[in-house]
Length: 519
Image 1 (tube, rainbow, N blue to C red):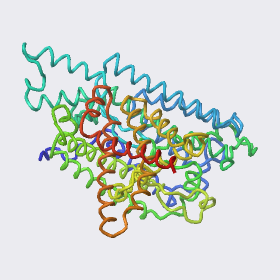
Image 2: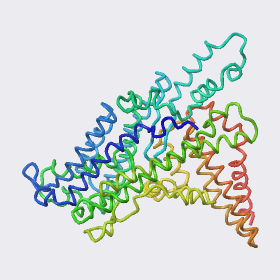
Image 3: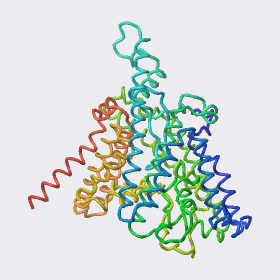
């Protein structure tokens, strides 16, 4: 096991840790009385909360530090969305906000596609916000690396994998398949933390932009449904700039800028207004526990990673050996997601946003679970549908509210299709999310049928054990597919024995549909 650098972090996690002391200081100012009630509302000769200013300035500074000039990709839609919220009526605000935000995000993703496929940009590790998951090297880099290795290969070599050292084979496999890279954008971890390359800054900006899409569309739905009222509608007489400050602060507040569960605008306001009554020790204790949990998950991931190369061996594995490779890779991905989710929750808790709302005004309406990681349920459930609802819970709730409940036909398919669009429409994402939708539909039909057959306790135990294994292997297959960035990698995955498990569920789904129609 290589423990040479056990605390090597992804740049995104590094910036989260950098923001941690500022989050603690922010909550301390709120709870210690250092910011009096009058001081909070004294700014620009008007009564506006100084806390909004602190959160907004902190978010802007963090965005500039992590993204460089790519922070403009985040600032531009922020101001446009705020303008829409104050100029469009409640009946049309959701449509306008949705079209604006998704159009801008799609253009940014297309720019990343163009850079990867045609400009053949260097790879970069990136963490996306919806699932908060690490994405892979850009596909254009695969062709560049492959050509370099082909030129260097001796004449007469028919297969690259047979003519190179094992370490070189793994590097080529990672580049050719677009597999999750551990080199942190090709530079040592210390250099990466001090000076990120433009591709890394761009992907961090896109990750934050996806989170911002959640906030914008969620707030637009709240306005459309009458749960939130803009100041212009109330006629409070404040200047437009002062009315826009809470919205800008919500869209850019630093504890949830780079990651974290979706916090509604109502909860954000209630938390700010009731922060003076919170106890400073509670969030620090909760944040400390979550940081220790994130560290434990990170070290566990390093231990698991030392047991084999993730997905790199898919190019030369055979038979059911490929099943182990995909399962092992999916386990690494899940541990990365879990540790990042817990770290995001720790930052929110340190700033005081993970606390119970208590008896503050509007607390009952704004209550909700600010947690994404229910690791026990995710790792023990034998239901794909339950896994789907629990995986990145705040994003799942957001998708259910935004698409599933509002879709006139085929809501399940529409939800997963939109999720693929929101994630960037890479080939693996389109295939993976559509496959996920089919597996959830199969899960709804297969389990009632199997439960009707399991009568005795030992058949029930066998049913739960087999369906748990099936669920784990199907989720590993979907996760590996979503992480692919080109068609050749998808073909390798589809041609392996891993396809047996989703095909089994797919055939069972078709048989149960035909059986129900015959009845």
